[in-house]
Amino acid sequence: MKNILLMTLMTTAIFLMAGCEQFSTSYQRIDDAEFRLLDFIFEPADASPGDTVTLMAVFAGKKVDNLNDYIKWHISFNVVRDLLFGAATVLDSSRLEKYSFDTVQFSGATQSVAFKIPIPKDIMRQSRQIPDRWTDMLPPSVASTIPAEFASMTKNQIIDTLESFLENPDGVLDGSSLSTQNADYLPRLLQIFAVPIRVAAKIEESGRLPHAIHSYQTIRYNRRLYTAGVKGIPINRNPSIDSVVVYKVEGGEDIQSFNTKSGRKYTAKRLDNSADPVIEIESGYSYFLEAFSDNSIDTSLTTSGAPAVEKHYAYWQFGLNREEAGGVHHSEYMDIGKVTRGGPSKLTPPSNRNIKRFTLWVTVNDEVIGELNRPEASTLKEVSGRFTYR
Image (cartoon, rainbow, N blue to C red; front, side, top):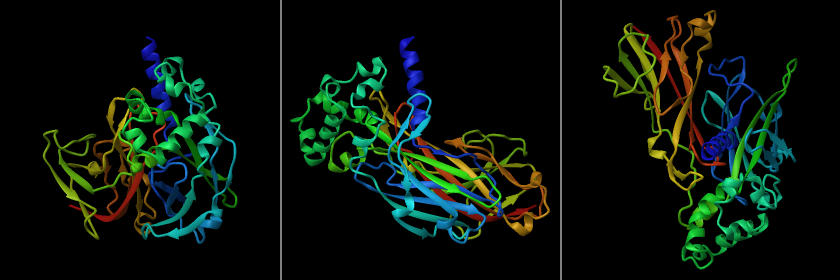
């Protein structure tokens, strides 16, 4: 029973402590009259103390003349998040605009900005997320599994050890500074020695309450240790989308799910390799969308040290042509199924045939069940095309 309870608590913490973006609301349909966030993309996704991170924020919908005036940005390097319930306390905050800032081009249908953010080298020492007696924040059943050499160290002594590995990675590789058992435990230790940062984008429009978007990301030593050649250190990279495909499946419009091994007859068409892709709508068929990112799957470790392979999941958003959709009730718009993990999403075509032009945005995120404090990685792809009707 104790093991079941522990796994439940740790799984809850994994979901809540992951660096996922926090939206006050998510929007699947992007209208020209509203300003909407599509994605925050951190590069590298797995950043370490002392790194410089590029944060690209991509928006769609209403066009804004000057994004830097329209949005007030803040960055927080000292954030405490509750291990079980995910509530965050921000202990410091500064304006993000003081760092290198530029308006960048993601696509003609979006607006985007990019910041170069230097992560303080002492962020882990200064963060109150990890107490000096760091084992105190862990359940006793977890703390009891930590090798005595690590458990006896203070927070700063652990950080000193990690920094020494960066100066002399061979000390880890040949076991001269750690026993083999403790060197093997190092990747699991890094899941505990990870701290959150928060980016806040506050949008203030005349006559409306402020709309705040909060994005949390996790900083840990994995990338620098991996780059230094320390064996067995997993890192999390942003996925890459290899292709976007639409399936035309025989069997009527009431089919709610589909995979290519279902036995149903279908045709597949790639949408992202054409300047003007066409989806041909015909009665007697159902339609599904899928974004493929299998070539960018990362491997990792669970809190128990077991190997794990990440899962990717897709979130779809769409926009319609203003002239075609004008005067059309929203019930006649297209629709796309919600988040999918490793499979196609149902595409419901417009019931009003005046709607022909569309823009699709798909965000692909990753997750590993059983890993604590994993940075979130994501990518975004846009496809614009048109429907034809038979």
